Image 1 (cartoon, rainbow, N blue to C red):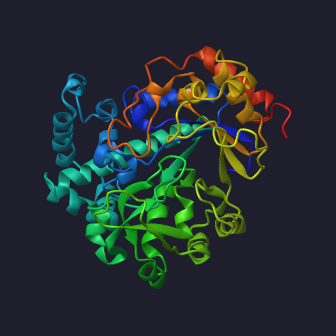
Image 2 (spheres, rainbow, N blue to C red; image 1 turned 120 degrees about the horizontal axis):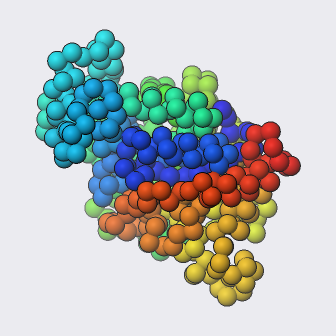
Length: 429
């Protein structure tokens, strides 16, 4: 699977599933996507979510989030009894671990010897718990992930992951590699559409000179792990590979920062030949995009992003991924309610506006069109995933069990087929 085939996808994070993990609901969602003729399932980062449950402040750029481990899957593996899946998750994981460690499988030893596993387990153990327990959690996450991805591949559904540019301020990556990060400054973005004072992310900023001297080895290792999990990757804050907005540590807002150079084209000239993944990367090129950012994106053939809520009247280009909205946007229904009366009339009124916007996205020139699940369901602002700049209340939305019906799948499939996004069917572009 690559990103050059005309196709469609749905954006839904794992934590937004009814069970919020790698269990049966994830498999049902894959099956629903396949029934709707959908080729891609896009998620947010799957690392151990940090402050405020944010997947963009994960405690590790390599590890999986143990909260995504399914107790039902542990029961299928014989590590839990059915009645034990109803216990509090932490307690159930402890029971499963005791049974696992009594007779660990042969592939556990080579897994736990991986450098990133050792780094994360050292970090996680410092916060509580025995090292073998954290090794088990990562091993089990990996095993359940591989099983879900294999099921998705059988159903013809590819997984798109999300790679945050930055890591958590006090996570496993900074502790294991302090020499790779600057002191006295933190990351953010300048004032923009989302915030008049910018966004103060607070993540540590890389010492790109040190990484360049080491052949970007840390990044190569990181992307290799992500490419083992996903069929394609969205490079979040792609602009940061050209230039970075640094803010003095301790600042209250991101307004008084400064741009400093990122690694530039040399990063991709070094990394891409090693990983062979140029046709599997999406450049999140939203925001203050400079000609240099566009040139870097186009030089390596990465599709950029187009969001209809920002560029409704832009015809777009083929080498793009078009979205009705992203996890940082309001839902289409919520966005529509804030539009001027003239725009609302142009879009045909409130009734069914989400389907008309989905139709626009699917009909676009872009090779790939992706729609958040909230827009497929026509939900309002209460279903929004994230409000940039707001410190709490984000990342909590859950899909109601059974909400994605066969009828909705049929309507989405008909629209995707008419737009030439179902393999072997439709008019194409």
